[in-house]
Length: 71
Image 1 (cartoon, one colour):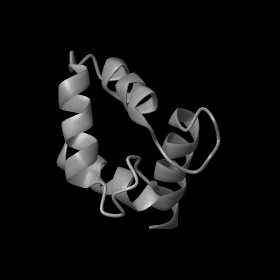
Image 2 (cartoon, one colour):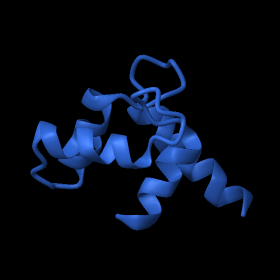
Image 3 (tube, rainbow, N blue to C red):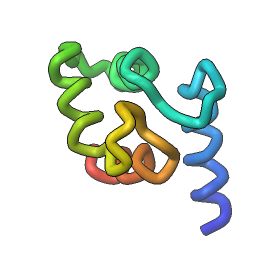
């Protein structure tokens, strides 16, 4: 289980380009681009709105992991 956590943390850290501990719209866009998914800004904002339990407009590590589990 520790290896899974380390892997998701590494993935999160890779996309958290400004290193502020959250994934914002542009960083999430990069996630979808790397998955070869053509997603509009409206869809990205919808994903963040749906997954963002803290309602701060960004995804923390727990919210990001939850998103990965449903993709």
